[in-house]
Length: 132
Image (cartoon, rainbow, N blue to C red):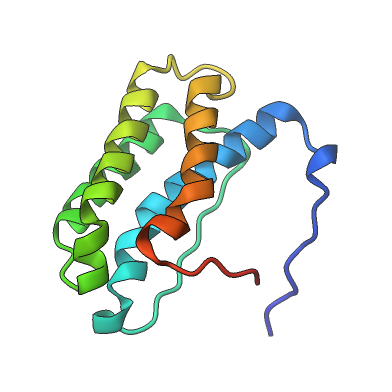
């Protein structure tokens, strides 16, 4: 039996940690989107990501590079419809990450882009956002 999801008061978290989690959440959406969009043909999908609270530039760039071929191989109608926007999002986050020095919390431009992406993404591709 899985434990219940944890309830966290975001106002009690340090700003650098919230910034890191915001970018991490956008990365998770981009990395998992191909599997979520193609689950009609592949069956169910479950994914997990872990963090120690530190965003690492090289790992971020490696993940974004690894997801590129998956985006290009989307074949379902939903996947094909989302491909262009998903690749644009991947490229934008990659450019922001490449310009970051990798020290400390992610830059405000990367956090702002991530927040905007998270607010719009489910609406753009018809993916229903759900609460656990």
